Length: 76
Image 1 (cartoon, one colour):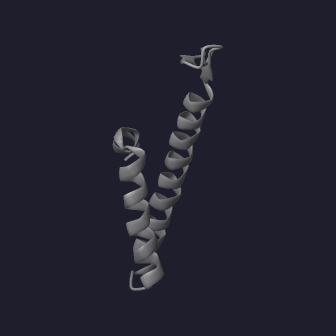
Image 2 (cartoon, rainbow, N blue to C red; image 1 turned 30 degrees about the vertical axis):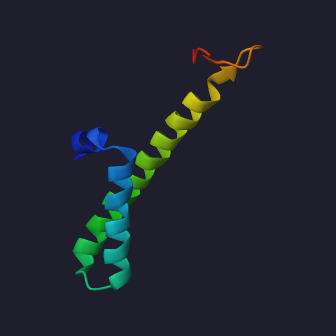
Image 3 (cartoon, one colour; image 1 turned 45 degrees about the vertical axis):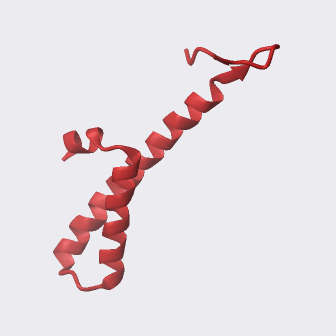
């Protein structure tokens, strides 16, 4: 499960998370299935937060030169 999660894009993970939320809100799942779905949803949420943090760091690494052209600042 962790291996497939690492390969998910932010958009795919978010779509799966939305599907899980709709299923949980529907209240039609058996308890054990709902718990499993909730656990997967929590993992997907953390994955999405990490992807967003990475994207934010990349955006913050872009600085403007004196002539107005963008320059990528080192993240190290």
